[in-house]
Image (cartoon, rainbow, N blue to C red; front, side, top):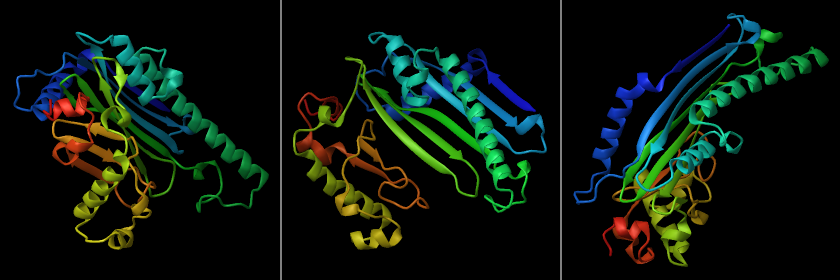
Length: 294
């Protein structure tokens, strides 16, 4: 049996209002600059699909909470929406409306799960003595899957919009995997803000030292060797990875599991306040403007 639930935008409007208020409070800098005139809506979908429609068999579960822009006083809403869709669901979906993209993504997830189960059955038929999962043989031994995909607005002031896409999934076994992908948009130009837009040449070496210092401080250790004992690796070669957010206080880098740390550890998050990178920032960059350098 397949359960498929969709919450309408109208039903979610109180949640959206609360969300926008929360963002405004988090982003307040105590200046006269107002929050950006971007409005948001939300599509929430949940689905469960059991193999062969039998609730006794394994299933896939997916939950999507897609927050997306619906209007702006200066930027083109369609361009903003397309950027959100492409970086949440993937390029194949960016010609669809937000509700259509979310719906298509969920249906594709179910189709891929069904295809994986069929491949498993075919392999088991070819080699009936093989035990790929550690469970009893038969189609009931195939894993259940789940995925949770969500968007959150981190900062929405001073002409920039920072948002994060979080994806949690499990394809069998005890371990699940979380990944974080961060984006900053310049609403004046409609372009994504890149590191090269923020920093003068040669910034990477100086930023590397600050990143390492932040990791040491968070782990409450004094050396890279101690970090490595905790499950980090390649720390001396760590570089800015373009996976960053901007807020009112500084820049935030996130390194997903497996980049410089073992999968058993949480994804390292590195916050560097603007006051520590003033000398690295380009004049008139959005970061220098937020930091009050101009």
